[in-house]
Image (cartoon, rainbow, N blue to C red; front, side, top):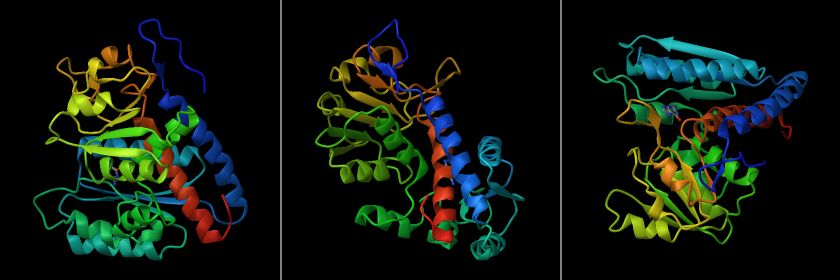
Length: 296
Ligand code: GUN
């Protein structure tokens, strides 16, 4: 993919929005083929409660799945739903052959008896398109076939589509969450990068970053990664989603500084974010293909 012309700095701006749309177009073709084989991809999205941000995320996932020609089963449950009721819903989706992917939007409401860990464990690992079930975490670490969490999968896809080499490179991952930091480190390792895991207790984060060919910033601290932390030409993936002091959405990277030195950089918004939904759809299509015994 070609770089966007940039007048300010030299970094190639990685266009996650355009890349995600291209993948969603590719998935339309896959969905059509699977439908003809009698395996129309089906995605179930479970939303408990009324959290406004979660409602927006769920609506975006539903729309994208429908636009790609998938069946969408949206299950909205009230805030006061019990753990037993939620588990019963998940078991019924596990047993439903029309459902190939199950996603329970997190976080679950606090205050009742809902338990996120138990809920994620209840999802069949073969339908866990979020890649959060311990079985899928283990498969990722062991290099076995499973489902990879969507945001880290999107990061790797961006590196690949922009032809940014991974093998033999030094990747610095900032953040150790189960959703991004830990799985992206495993994916980079599996592609033969040398991976340094950094976090809030890392002694000298700036000097670690200065040794990086690839930086993945996923901590949720606005303005953490500065321009003088960047080795000239490094690729920088900004996974942070924060509200800046001006109220605008921003990442963990000081964009206007980092773009002066990086070789490639993802913006916020429009970088890694849109890739998450594209990867969710891809995981669901992969699941439908596996269930039908065909290659995607
Ligand atoms: N809430 C925020 N991000 C995610 C995600 O990737 N998966 C789920 N299930 N919930 C989320």
